[in-house]
Image 1 (cartoon, rainbow, N blue to C red):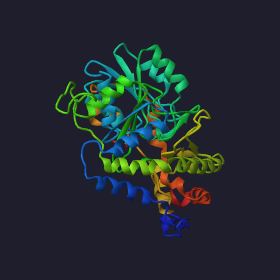
Image 2 (tube, rainbow, N blue to C red; image 1 turned 180 degrees about the vertical axis):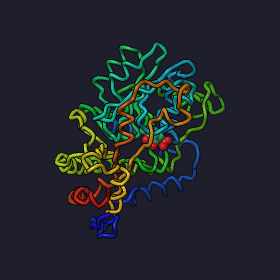
Image 3 (cartoon, rainbow, N blue to C red; image 1 turned 45 degrees about the horizontal axis):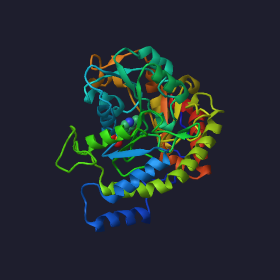
Image 4 (cartoon, protein in one colour; image 1 turned 90 degrees about the vertical axis):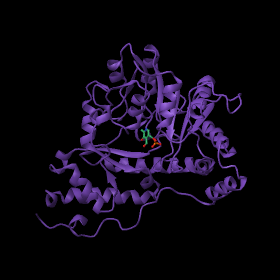
Length: 395
Ligand SMILES: Cc1ncc(COP(=O)(O)O)c(C=O)c1O
């Protein structure tokens, strides 16, 4: 192997400064937490929960918000509240985090895997149309990496087939489609506040909807089957305890106040990075549909074509970039229908060549990197060029 200046061979890395850390917080989180502490009513629904729910719903132009402990139980709660269970099918993408499809199995229904679009990485409306059966009751599009799904194609299709649209907006806080924030554009939308997410309290989840009855059912499921009107020991519904704590709600309200500034910064840095990537053969960024006027960029996504890098396997490309202190990830190693709990016959699988391809080609950068200064994006560009120029030394 030839010697090179690559950091993986002991050379000076392109970057020595740390990237912005995540999570970020300041005195407003501290003050919110202290207020919960001093109110001294640590269980049940602290007033911080309602405050956050109101603000989060308003930010997404939704009428109702129901919080829960995470963005997995939100999906299960939505499915239960829509009476989806054994005998029903729910269409999901296989290129996503496991919770999207596991929730369907957990409520006793069957996940049906339909492919994603290779350019947007989002569920393809054509693939959904081909996967629909008379048993299909709902579809769960994921706004992957924060890019809203093509609602103009998906909503009419769902209406035609009588499918509930449950948006998995775990990546998409603040994203919008043609001016409309995601989350309540379908029947309901599910958000996660897990530690990597653009709005986080370490854990936590929320459902948005404009359907008051559905909101009430979801709230009841998340609060031991109670009704909003009845006494605490009356349980008209089967529910469990998924209540978000006041501590987390206080942290989320403080973070929400920062969301829009961060969203703008991520979008502007993403544009700078994209302008560089169009010049680079072999790295294709996720297509940013102009109708997605806000794209949260939870993930900055690219497809890597090894042929354009002299046949350098993706694994080695990623290792070389990491050595230059550019933290990139290959994301999911396999489509969800090849995870043991979701193989057939626990699921139904339609052909998903694009999802297979993304599992081979994805290179992802997480949202906190996009919070750096604009000229720091050039470190990413410099590192990619350095790896490219030295590819011979890696083969
Ligand atoms: C697309 C997607 N859906 C659902 C979830 C589940 O959220 P949580 O980790 O809060 O349970 C995640 C979390 O990583 C996710 O990425």
